[in-house]
Image (cartoon, rainbow, N blue to C red):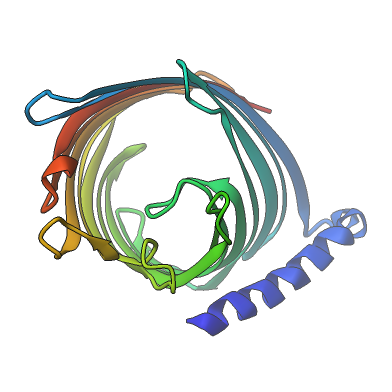
Length: 304
């Protein structure tokens, strides 16, 4: 898996070279050059409580997101680069604002009838991960899609992550590990899907606070209720075991999350209005980690 990042970066470096020559390629009637952009404003309201209601944590935030992208397409081949930035303004005393940058390069190719291969390189700067609130990451991924008919689609993806953690006044530490994703999607009609997702991932690190293993499973149902309006109920179950985080009894800490949610998507024209309601049930062999609470999100965006 370590070679996946290297190979993906090499292939996508070639893709970026193609983009550099895109004005000439665009003159070839076989290629299409498509720039795009998106802006989005999002509000979040969340509350978490311990099982005995002894501790209540409220959180509100407003975020701004901007994204620009460039796609170059020819029959059977699609290349894309994009960059986006999120600024999060946390409301309330004692809560610092945060920002996250992401850069992505993707190459997709049709291999044979019903088969597609995607290679992707991505860099995150200052994002919140499972094991740290300030993580930088390089990742390389390969995804294989099999879609024998429009009604059935299976995807398998392998991803390698190299991470670096900002530990404040302490020296930075590193982590690395693989993630494997599998998804089956059943299509019933336009924007009408039932999807099943499985994921297994791990991070190994010399920093005992950072290493972990996680498995998750989820199911989501998307149904259109109007030409530009869809509703999406879903549920996800996650299990995480940390390498060096111990309970008061000296055991490795194990957390379990159950997250039901409902999402409504209204996309009139180039507008993107999305509302999401989640409820998080968190269990753990560390009693102070047993909590539950809600998270409400509303975002309004415009795609250029």
